[in-house]
Length: 64
Image (cartoon, rainbow, N blue to C red):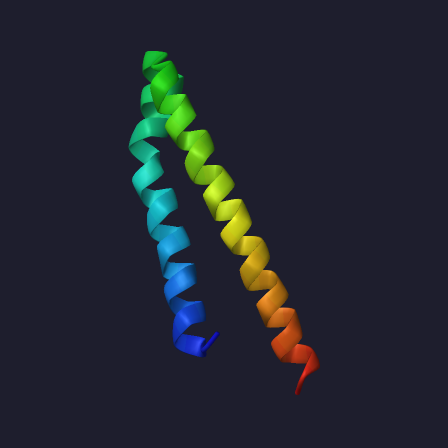
């Protein structure tokens, strides 16, 4: 994974969270359960991607 790939992964996670704001509001303010499911899905994807990025950063750090 290159630095550019890492940067893209981080930006994609940030964008996913920004995009999830509307569904977050729909769930908590309007009681839309389907929106809650979408938020949970985004959270799981971000969690998985964050863990992969953490591992890659640690491996890169250790190889220096």
